[in-house]
Image 1 (cartoon, rainbow, N blue to C red):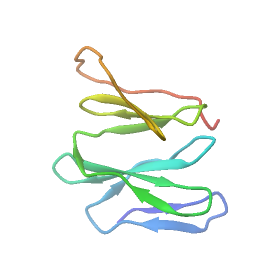
Image 2 (cartoon, one colour):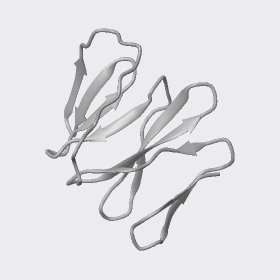
Image 3 (cartoon, one colour):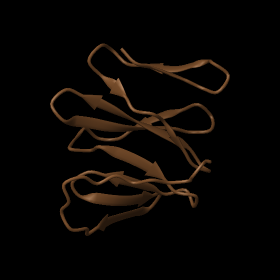
Image 4 (cartoon, rainbow, N blue to C red):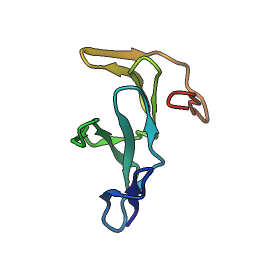
Length: 107
């Protein structure tokens, strides 16, 4: 399976065969990656600064996580959502063939 390393080469996590780890994204408060399972299912995984991992619910169609410079998360799926501690907003966007979010957070 896929493995996730930090900038020093230390292993942060490993997934079993068949589970894909997406490229991690980093924001000012935490970093995140998706655990993608076969059949279109995925779960968000958030790594806190102290090394703790928090796992989101298993969702169908969750395709991408993007962290914002203000510490929020945009979850690209059905629907598109904006999340922060204490905030959950559905971003009503028209249907598109492809939806991808580009961010400079953490750059």
